[in-house]
Length: 88
Image 1 (tube, rainbow, N blue to C red):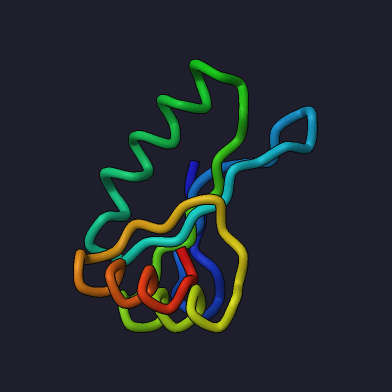
Image 2: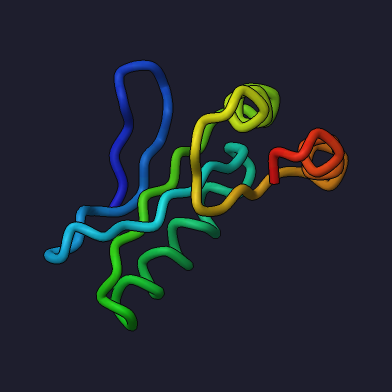
């Protein structure tokens, strides 16, 4: 499942019955693949997955500023900068 927020973000996933949910952030380039993977994971595990897909620069900024996610999927250079800064 996926939905678009009012500010252009795309969110994939639904709340699970148990209330537990994996959260992630990615660039828009990965949204379709991650939506498919999230749906498959949710079907197999029963655990909900919510993925926010935004521009890569915005995603990196949000992670760098401390917004919490269970996983981050960005370009290698962005991931390296986040790792160097101790954010991932």
